[in-house]
Image (cartoon, rainbow, N blue to C red; front, top):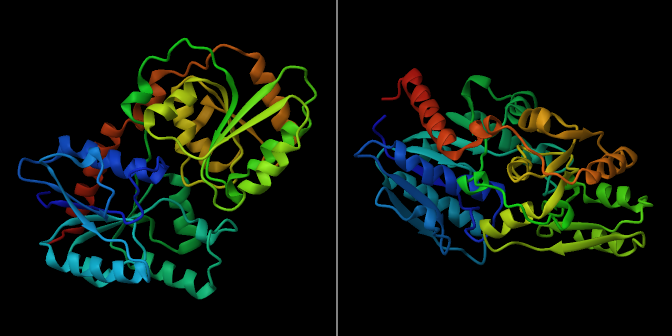
Amino acid sequence: MGNNLLFCSFYYRSNLKAGANKRFENIISSLKAHLAKDQKIIVLIKKGNVSEYFISDKIEVHELPEFPFLDRIITFILYFIKLMSFERLIVVSDFMPIPVLALSKHIHFQLIHDIRNFTEFRRVDYLSSGQKIQKRQWRKCQNIITVSNFTKKQLVEKCGIDPIKIIVSPNGIDDNYLTEIPANNRDIDILYIATFEKRKNHSLLIQALENYSGTDIIKVCLIGKDLGTKNDIVSHASGLDNNIEVDFIDHVENEGELIDYYNRSHLFVCPSLYEGFGMPVIEALSRGCRVLCTDIEVFREVGGKSIEYFKPNDRTQLLKQIEKNLIKKNKNNVDSQFFEPYKWRKIAGDLLESLSKKINNQNYK
């Protein structure tokens, strides 16, 4: 496989430590070691988002400007022109709408993190015609990469994608998460890292804690930017008068700061109702947190027996599990072998192997 690779994400923001951004950075950085001598990676992003992850003689960064009006349409046009200007590449992109015609010149793999727009948790109130267009574009893609078997299953069942087209490449964790865990005081009882939106289900956690009747103070830390529900959660939390203290943090500056929050936390609680993967679950386990998650398919796939589960929207069961786990003051020790599939170096190597197999099997010329 001698083609150069193009990784494109116009949604990527270098200052935002979200799962999709972390994947974009770490896959690109980790792939460097697997490239042939004459291969390189082209990174196509919005202006002002060049990261230290992209500084290498094997990586070439191209930037498109932000536009105050019609940004997506203008970006689509410029992306189309860029694609037509390049010699044949292996293109991995998450941008929508997909410039199918321009990508036909290349070997295209569309990255899909989740299909929330086909669920009740869609961020935009799509018209049925909008969903049909998205489905049609995905079906026309040469190949698709997604981050879990759960999402692959959804793509097949809800969008009619041929499963043969789909590669599953999981998300992972940075090597810094696998360093020795300090024996520090875990002064945060409950941590939850998630954007404030309906599917993240912060309200269940607050409702469960509302019924807490213990004498010990429970310190809760909620980290994430607001996507619509934060004001309601803050209002509800401020009304608690039963030894529950809730701290809200909009964002962290860097990965080291995020790791520190995990190191300080006894329990990571994730009441989310829908995820494409759930990267914070793996991160929390790697730093010795006990982890409670809703009993949904993707968490069973990602966390297996290393985490505890509660029924979605069962506040009584959740509170019981919180109280039971907070009594256990020792850190959660997970076998190091559990994390092997989630190391970015392995994920990048496996992805490159999968791309090569796809290209060879489909006999691209």
